[in-house]
Image 1 (cartoon, rainbow, N blue to C red):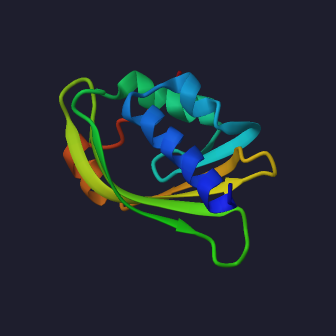
Image 2 (cartoon, rainbow, N blue to C red; image 1 turned 60 degrees about the vertical axis):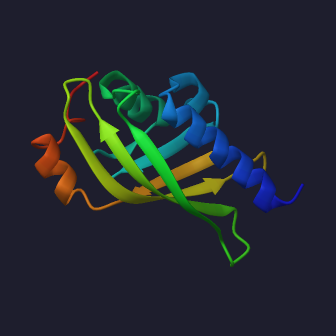
Length: 136
């Protein structure tokens, strides 16, 4: 299996776990010392970031529309997933935005770093601020 196929498989598992907000499934794809960058929260461990998302999100009203999967042309263990995300929270607020998630992998094909890239302007309008701004 090529690196492209291996990374695509990991990203597919990631998107499937995100679709149902499966905290353990998401975290199992990351190394123990991995970090996730969120435009709303900065750098966090995957468990903290996804726990907040899982606690807040309405699974049935959220949706992903995949667009592209891009592999680094520089020979680096990096893949980018481009998609449109409709994110709904349990209190009924909802927003839609286009995002690119940049995934970096280790030699065991686990994610070491995820950088989430999207414009938060419309999200902050639709959600009335940052819905993830709460302590666990």
